[in-house]
Image (cartoon, rainbow, N blue to C red; front, side, top):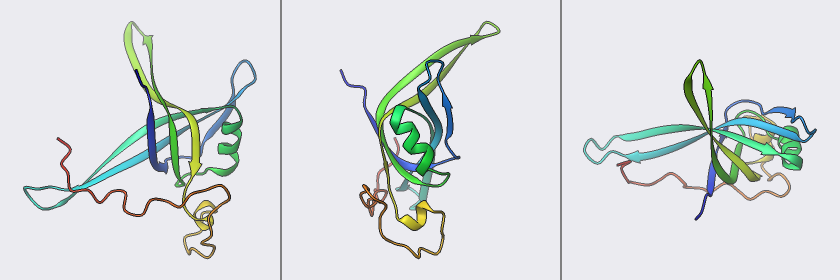
Amino acid sequence: MLNSVELIGRVGSDPEYRFMPNGNPVVNLTMATTRRWKDKSSAERVEKTEWHRVVIFGKLAEITRDYVKRGRLIRIAGRIKTRKWQKDGVDHYSTEIIADDMLMLGSRAEAQGKADGVSPEPVANQSPAPSKLDDFDDEPF
């Protein structure tokens, strides 16, 4: 069996950095992925955004804290985990991505929050972002 997920998207808010009771660092962040396609019946472009909760532990959490900010394009690889808890006798569920790997994408200018793109070279240890990732003409169902 396989529980594996890989996402490329933008960080929704600055990562929340804290420590677990055992002293290990952990980062929580939200990430948006957007799927675009052309509706075959109306020929209009359709866009659907999904939000994901991401949890990152250990040294990778420290790197994320130091270099990842809101709006940054990143790639996350990890596994899906669903937690269940009860509040007032009602079951609640939360699904999150437990990240094993994180890669920062985009230019150095993007990483520094510059809109003018003055510094186009990639940040160290990065691959360039895929160029036409969302040009698919398929329908969601």
